[in-house]
Length: 356
Ligand SMILES: NC(=O)c1ccc[n+]([C@@H]2O[C@H](COP(=O)([O-])OP(=O)(O)OC[C@H]3O[C@@H](n4cnc5c(N)ncnc54)[C@H](OP(=O)(O)O)[C@@H]3O)[C@@H](O)[C@H]2O)c1
Image (cartoon, rainbow, N blue to C red; front, top):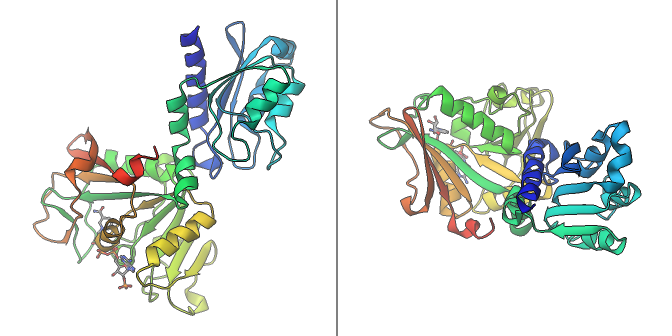
């Protein structure tokens, strides 16, 4: 029986992941309704502000099967809400449909819920089981939990380095990795809600910073540009997805502004630049920041211990000279993956691991 419960909860996890970035800053949640060992309805939280997973699962039950709801079990990756947010409380809908049993993986850490959903169900006579595959349920909310705890987005550094330890050359762009690694990076971009690059990278590489090879919505593209050196016709300002230019300049020529979707944030470029930018992103509810270089920017994040994870591609190509890649502490490496001739190394900051 336990194995069956776990397999339904695992199905909830799979469904939850389909929400991807579209639910941010809400958590990922999946739901499955089972009648006599048959799934009669399933759903997930699909988009921020949209219906919650349990409501989508109830709505997904065919008209002819609605009569079985009062004998069914609802499986959920996360405790149902009991308060009015963007949508009415899910607990009320569960009670209205007279679902007699609810199995939940993880209790909602949001103080507005935190056990109250379970209490309300139990008080109404619903049998509730909590904690099935709890550790995995918690992992699904890792970004959400982390963001609330640290009060800043999760910072993921990403870079590629040559076999001899260089990021690139000052004179112009250099491509180090293979098309599979490139596609993986686009997947990662689709999993975060913001990306940051330094001034020189915007000028030298002129990246698009979108997720076009993963056919996904692109995150906010952020460029540091203290003195307004980056051409407003650069790809990163092409208006295909939103951009944020962080600068110290008081004013820009209006004809240099991209026509739409470019916001300008004025910050002091002193020592507190990165903490101030992270606070701004936290206030705007951005939960992850992918830092895509270049060297100076990556070094600044590492020097201020403002990073949580680093994903480093090592290419077999040699550049002989150029911009040195950050030297990551090999003791912090938690994973190595071979991608044809490229190697991917994943590092975790020990200060952040405690929150996962
Ligand atoms: N292999 C890879 O994965 C990868 C990824 C990205 C880039 N790259 C390569 O890296 C090179 C560019 O790297 P880079 O080190 O020269 O420049 P960068 O990190 O892209 O940009 C550095 C510039 O950003 C501005 N900046 C302002 N505040 C900063 C802060 N707190 N920390 C860091 N930068 C700040 C400064 O410009 P001002 O002085 O004008 O204010 C600084 O000179 C290019 O060759 C590019 O091809 C490689």
